[in-house]
Image 1 (cartoon, rainbow, N blue to C red):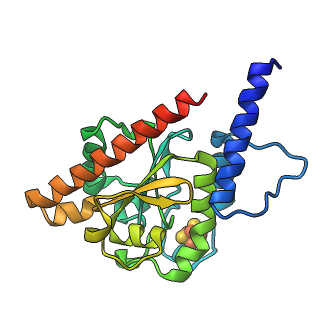
Image 2 (cartoon, rainbow, N blue to C red):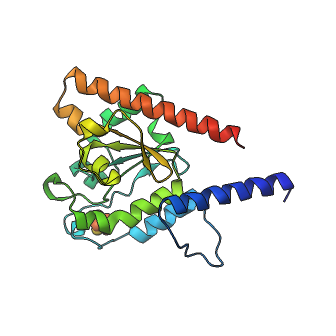
Length: 231
Ligand code: SF4
């Protein structure tokens, strides 16, 4: 291995360790094993979640909706929970809300393939109710595993519930949106859930959501430029 490649590998390892620390991890269960890459880590996680019965949401689900997209994404989109369509298809954000999300991402130049899309909990709550605290806690290791594997620079949190849960606050989305928040070392941008925008089709909410997307895109571009300049 050349000196340049070794320096690059050590920088990547230092970035990863800083990321684990910022996510609150105090222990790495690795001993003699190597650190897997994002694709492999996600595959491992998908194997672990298969048939999961860690919480009561397992009883009503058809499919576990793990998440889809680019394992090397710098943007991770996090919603609340799968709905009826997602439960059937096993993919997050399909159906009308999903189509709107695709258009929202495209409006600032992202394709669905280049980001990673998931939810706080991976199984559909009955009647689409909000996930309960014990369900969120049971599913949290899977979300944390996804964050650690992907190490996004920016999170787009969709809707009141996802934003409040991730930021551990009761402030409503109307107050949280429009500004940057920190989630460990990741920048978090809250915005309205596409299902909310479909229920409230007025121009004003869509304009605000577009402002949030532009904010997320600016931050994403800024962080990517900063990180490539540091290489
Ligand atoms: S919601 Fe998460 S923790 Fe609960 S059963 Fe589904 S995968 Fe397991």
